[in-house]
Length: 373
Image 1 (cartoon, rainbow, N blue to C red):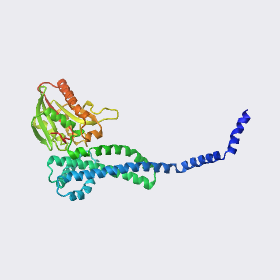
Image 2 (cartoon, rainbow, N blue to C red; image 1 turned 90 degrees about the horizontal axis):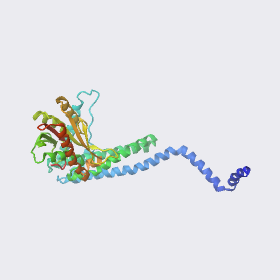
Image 3 (cartoon, rainbow, N blue to C red; image 1 turned 180 degrees about the vertical axis):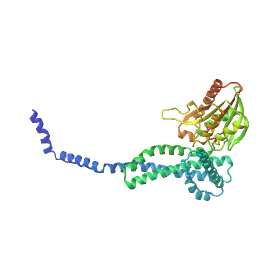
Image 4 (cartoon, helix red, strand yellow; image 1 turned 90 degrees about the vertical axis):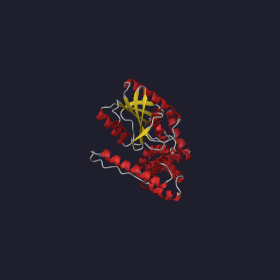
């Protein structure tokens, strides 16, 4: 019995020419994978990446056209805008030298303020008929186009490098950065309509809360594009700070908080309200409490807030609303709008529990005030 079974495969192999060919084909295929496997993988990766690169290029060109069309509404020379826009899309800021940390915050602030001034001056020249609020929103639109242009150039660089060298390492770098950059590009692209039409965005939640609490109280400019209002809440004296809308600006909240404390009085508490990037699995619109200065960016404003709070011994509390990057820079959705009342309810509870009647509270609504009055 065992002898008979042993002869069957041999008989099949000898009598089956197709089986022999298939067996040899598998051997050659395995050898080819050993020799050319890396090249095949590089080819397939570059082919998939080319589709993403083409999509990024379309996004970049659409954003450029959107800026030209929107800006031309406030200008008599569309040709001048078309000539100048490509130079503006290559605009860059060089980070200061950090070898000596002493004074680095002042250097960063100086460069950021200079960059902001230059960009707004350029937009003002291209759109002379636009008012100050519209100039701010157009500057935001230009920044979105600039961001998409930079993302396209980065991916194009990795793609061409991988294609030129045929290197697995280069294509691995492309595979690693591509998903993150495409997510950010989709978020930027979705914000084009909001910035071109001056609509309130998700990042405007902080100023929206500040505006609702301030009500009809008069606003006084305390820092560049940043206002302070005085009002009352549950027997407490509120000093409310936010960027001055309805133009697209985040103002200078750090400087505003410092000046407000110097001008008015030492508050018993500083509360900052801002948007926060949610993690995967978290729900948009969720309100979270914490300690510290809730403010993003390069850190200049956070440094100023922390500095004055530490010097004066003022508690720093924070409220953030979770949202994705896309929600933060796109038109504010209903879930985020509902969270405004939730934030105010949590604020009232915290103020009632941790302060006394008659205390002064400094509240800062951090974020982009586009569309917020």
